[in-house]
Image 1 (cartoon, rainbow, N blue to C red):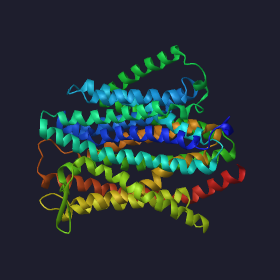
Image 2 (image 1 turned 180 degrees about the horizontal axis):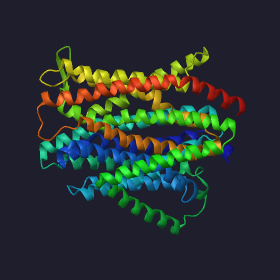
Image 3 (image 1 turned 45 degrees about the horizontal axis):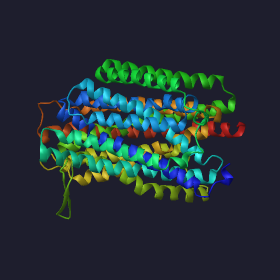
Image 4 (image 1 turned 135 degrees about the vertical axis):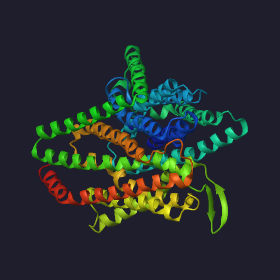
Length: 499
């Protein structure tokens, strides 16, 4: 069938998926740039509650694809789930645009986003794999471009939504800017959906087995009913912190139990690979605790203790909105990704490439430098405000560390986990990442600023103390990763020799 198709079919099919992914990430990161500020400044939450609510939501967003991927493969179809997920996300961001401060309404809207993400995220990535199935020479470059589309969407939205919020608030007041910005997130998904409808013929030949069958309305109704229940459960988890903690601890026990069960029941070569995957997954969990600071403690640090006037050699260029600093992460990633890929290729040709475990250790050491940049910058602050250059430099190290650890996480699963367990273990990996997102919020609360403290001179040491402690913690993670290298070498050798 594929041989009769025009040669551009793969490219056009991939373009359709990449564009909807770009707009979905536009919506998600546009919301992320503002959500903690919205809770603190508009809803009146204290720092502690805002950090934990958003971190619990991020955990749910990472856990939900483990279920959504199964629904796409076995129940509704990969293609249908991608489209349905995008529709639900559009509704979720649209609900965030409703001008209300009712927390149950806001948390239910976030629950809609969780359900939409669970259906959209895994099935979109699966469609990319299916487009290039059997064509290994193209799949790596395709996922590289796919990852770039993620960063393009997130960069644009994290620069745009804080500006839109500030502009509308200034012109119209009444806090309408927040909801206008969330409405833009929803509008981005509408553009993405329209694009998929216009180019749907490019996806006609791909999908999972259920996509090839007529849509069964009963199954669709069951999935939607399950989604409504999941929305309600998400709202409860976000509303009650004790429930959120119980959910996270239960998820951690389940994931660890699954790993232990699979390790015990596997053959020697598979067992070595699974143990290696467990070691690296635990390291990834620690990394994402650092990563979650971007939308929690670092976001609030930018709000209270960063000079928003950007200057070069004494010349004022522009004024940042605090949320826009988060866009530095994808900007740095887009800049450094091709450089790092070139270095990997060159090192590989010279037989000097670091192992994944070695890259994890290097990544943690670079993350440590990034947090020390934030911590030490407090010594050079003026009236409690650090230069915005501190954020640019710190995010540079932070993002390079992300590329070395998070960027290789899925490659680690593919390398060490048997193919028959691949889909299942990918889900377990995302659940583990979700757990660490919540733990990141717990860590961020060590820099929770009481509502009665508003003087930058008083808030600055609270943040810099946390950042220095995180720098020390990243050094400890580096040492642990280095000490695990001999074990990883033995496990990798056993895995390859008997695999």
